[in-house]
Image (tube, rainbow, N blue to C red; front, top):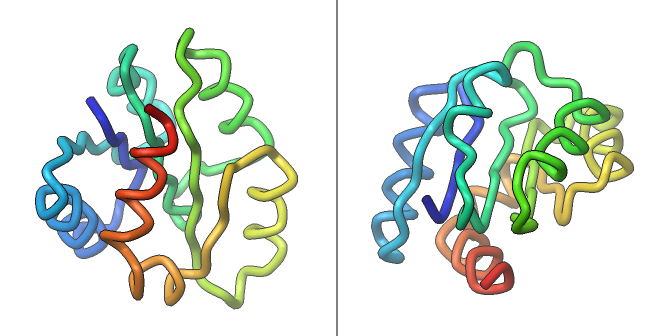
Length: 120
């Protein structure tokens, strides 16, 4: 799977899956951190994390993703701009990029394409 999305928001899932399809990249979705491990497979190039998904702790999740696979997928996170501490925690936990929702969705196909290509 090229992209694995950790997100419980159905509208976000639809937008991100649609953007992935638009650039010709398969996308799997996990609706909780516990379900994520089943979706991570060798060859995963990008893990996109919605920081508003219940149970998200970037300081625990990011290292877990890093050690789950031999290949090193890129990890990006996005969340509301008003959750500055959570965005900062995602950045300091080792995410390759962190975006506010506005930044992420304004450039969605470009962001996905960039991080999938970088991880090749």
